[in-house]
Image 1: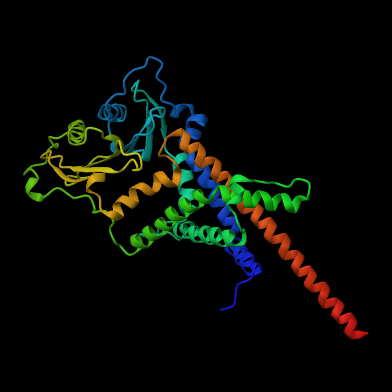
Image 2 (image 1 turned 180 degrees about the vertical axis):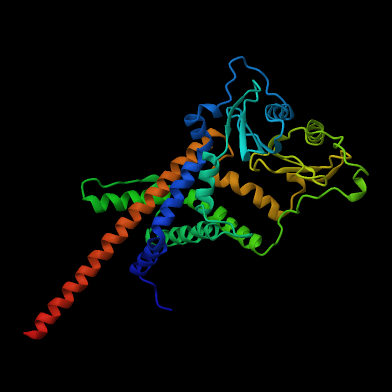
Amino acid sequence: MAKLSNRFWFQLHGWFSLPIWLIFCFVCLTGTIAVFSHELTWLTNPASRATNPDNLAARPVAELVATVQQAYPTADVGTVMVFEPYLVNAVMFTDHDKPFAIAYVNQYSGEIQQVNEGITFIGFMRSLHGWLLFPWPGSYSVGYYLVSAMAIVMLGALITGLVIYKNFWRSFIQPKIRFNQGRKTVLADLHRLAGVWSIWFLMLMSATGLWYLVQAVMWHADIDIEPHAPIVAIADMPAEQSTPPVSFADAMHITQQRFPDFRPSYLMLPEHNRGMYTLMGGGDHIFYDEQSYNLSINPWTGEIAHEKSPQSMTALQTVMHIADPLHYGTIGGIWTKAIWFLFGLILSGMSITGFMIWGSRTVKAVRASRSSEALQEVNHGA
């Protein structure tokens, strides 16, 4: 078998990035911004800040829901989202004049600080990064496939880059950037140095991105990674229409008793008479996301119809719930977010410098080839 030349690997490395380098760079940049989407929301929207000058304890989520229902008596509250302590709770509801609204309720003062009837910055950035705002006509999105496929591009660029850059590990102990040898040399040195120091990040983004691609295929094929939330059995329903005896506050109390370290994050109230409370949250497991605990509670009997926790997850469910913290760097709070943000910027810069290097060498090679052909024609004519 013939040995592949370094030129071949360089061209392959370029082709892994060149055809879609603009999309790849855009995905990197939006992902980098999405890492700090919560902090940017706090910075740019004063109504999103959970100010607490009197150092009050956070009120129960059920009390915040009651506050919204008192302010909007005809509202139908469906979901509550709980973020970091410095952000307000988001209570989502519908009303006769509001097809979809989000009440920003300060969990310390109990005050409704804003009612948002549009998309939030957090939701916009995650959607823009996750599926480029492409529609979801069913159980799939072309945009989600496109973004997830960037993992293949990233992995291919990483492998071919390491093949091209011989003895790459020397950049860990003897990093060098030759500033006095022209722009092309500086770009090449920066690209190689950034690539070597970002190997761990590239591998992590490739691994989680490949999982998102597998997850997209499973969604499209209607393969359930997690079971659907159960519904109330007809036998549990009362003979006459009435209000369920188990309140939202009761459901939260049952959840805390079942999982003492439960931290609420995404709480859904019953949508209809046979619907259940679906309560999701995180716990003390550093590598699991904020939906790693999931309980379905019967509003008519108070029984736990379904539960999930890190201890009871299948292998696929475990991968599903550790992918996001690893992809967005939320495993260690603000400090790991800062590291992910920095390397996200580096990766975005690498895609730009890589394109510039590949483009300049390709243009140079084309010009040299044309000059050679022109010279041959002149010699042939003579």
